[in-house]
Image (cartoon, rainbow, N blue to C red; front, side, top):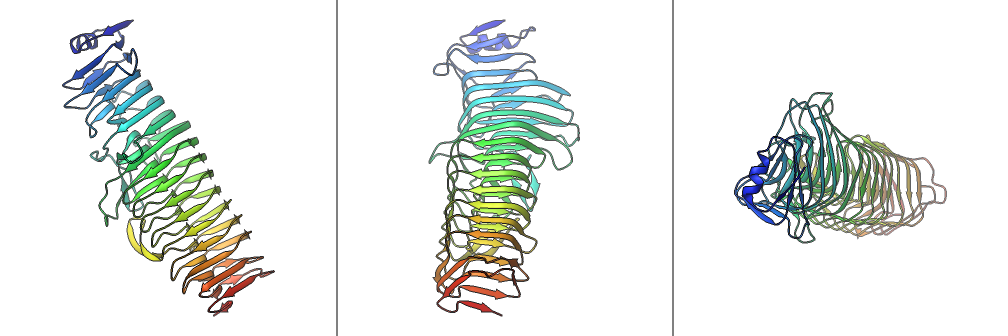
Length: 465
C-alpha cells in the first residue's frame, strides 16, 4: 500500500503502522530526530527536486530488513549517517537504494548475528560527507583505514556471514569539494570471515580527502577502497577518481577483484597518495587514461602484497620527491604501459606499510622478492630528478623485457638502468641514456641478454662493479 506523506506528523504516524507501506514523500520535510524504517517498509519521493527529507540534529534513516529507498534527496549534517542499518537479525533480506542525492554517509554495516544481507544500490550521488568518526576500521599492513562516504562493511567475523552487493553508478564528492574520509569503501571483517561478494560495482566521479595530518604514518584513506574479505567480479570506474590529502590512495585493494577497469584519469594531489596500490589478488587491471600524482612520496603503482596477473596502464607520471612511478615487491604477471612512465622528483619521504621512508623517485623499481614475468613499455621511461634510477632492478627479477622507447635519466648523478643486489633482467634492445650520470650500472646483478643494448652516459656507458 502507498501512503502520501506531506508533513512530519504524517510521516511519524505512517511509520507506526503494523502493515508495511510505501511512504511517498510529496514535499520537503525536516525531521528533528532520526527515523526507523520498519521491516518491509519503503520510502520514495514524488520527484527528487521537491521530495527532500532532511535531519537537523541526528542521523537520518535507519534500515531494519527488506527496505527500499528511492527518488529522494536526503540531507543530514556531513558527519552524520544519512542511511544506516539498525538490525542484527540473521537474515536482513534485500535493501534497495536507487536514484538518491545524499548529504551524509551511507553506511551498510552488518554486525555479529547477521549472516545474510543483499544490497542493490543504483544511481547514488553523495554530495558531501565526513566519514572519519567511526571506530570500525580495517587494520592491516601497519595502517587503519577510514570508512567511506558510501560504506559496505561486513563487521561479523563468522565465516558464513555474507553481504551480497550490486552497486551501479555511485558518484561521490565534487571537483574541488571532496568528501572527507574515503570515498567508496567495500570490506569484510578479515581474511577468514565476514564476506562481501559483488558481481558488479561501477562508479561515476569520486573525489575524496582524508584530512589526515602530515606525518601520521598509520592512517590512510582511498577514493576506492576494497578491503580484505571483499570479492568483486567486475569493478568499473567510469568516472575520474581523485584524492587530495595525505596518505590518500586513489585505488586501493586488500581484497580480490577479478576484472578492474578505470576509464578516466586517476589523480592524487596529496603526499604519500598512491594512484593504484595492490595488497590483494587482482586478475586483470586496466587504466585507460593516465595515472598522475603530485604530492611528496606519491607513487603511481605499487604491488606490495598478493599478486596481479595482468596490469595495463595508459601512462604514469609522478611529480613529487620520493614519488616512484612503479614499485613491485611481490611476484606478478605482466605489466604493459601504452605510453610513457615519467617521474620528476628526487629523493623524498614516502609512506611504506605504515612507516615513512626516504626513497628516490625511481621510474620503475623491482625490489627483492619482486618479480615481473613480462614487462612491455610502448613508450619511454624518463626520470628528471637527481640521484634516481629510471629502471632499477634492485634484487628483483624481470623475466621478459620489451621497451620500444628509451630509458632516460635527465638528473644529476641519475642512472638510467641499474641492476643490483642479485637482481636479474634482460636488457635486449634497451636504449639507455643518462645525461649527467651512468647509463647502465651492474653491481652484483645479472643481465641475461645484452643483444643490441645501447648505452650512453655522461659518467659511463656501462659500469660493472
